[in-house]
Image 1 (tube, rainbow, N blue to C red):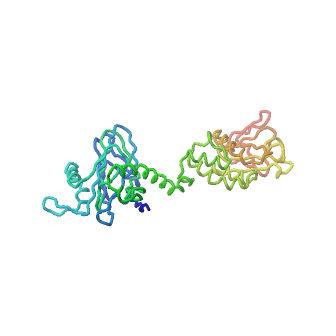
Image 2: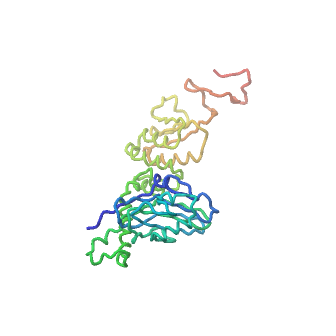
Image 3: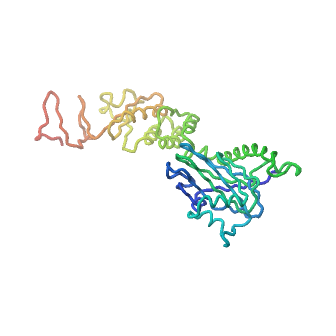
Length: 362
């Protein structure tokens, strides 16, 4: 039966204790601080595997380059956390994390301790390294920006090798390396399954997947919404809104997703007879009008119409009216006890008679 795979995630806390030369730390991500630097280094704080003679499996990381970049990873394992340097007992961590010691001297230590080195890879086998403590050095050479993330060490890193009879289990031979290909694929699948909730969580899923989620819910979004925050807010509300689809509450809930200013939904069938003059509130009992207390915004109007059409009552027609800071009265309209003039503004009466400074409305 395959052994248990242990995983060491080199996240923010461990990276804070490491030596970063030419990198800055953002959460669990390392970003290069200078595009012009030719060589940058990351000396990681040692990993403690707890038991002596531990066989390490593999190291994986994600790297994004912008420029001509060469990534080199070095690793060494030992049962001791100290070594003798210049006649003194020195902690390996203190030695590697000392910025005053040149990388060339540290490279001599990796070579003398039987370390391994790989260039141009983001998934590195650690077979052959045996010891309680694992020390890792990442070197980036070249001109350009670099981002390193998701640094992970697996122990032993192979799900299949231990299932074969002992006669086949010769460490670091061709057969073990060949099986590692399939083990790596298996581990990647398992990693995806372990984090499946991130692929289904509206707060963390990628934007393209958000549009797929919308289509699963029966909501059309493509070509209309480019604002990621609004799209996530919309998808969180859609199940509730679709449950009350065709109601005033559904329309009001949809509008509130896109605007924060006051708005009013006026249903024609709830108005008194004397308020029904003209076409302001529609022509049939199913019609309604949306009054929005902000300046006219045609892009917002188009967006609201697109989504309201998917949730309004089928027989209803509606109008969107932006009130803005200043409002005017059209022909054949009047101010009744429900109306008010909020701002001083020049006005003109019918047939050319003007409001002078001595005339006012009250």
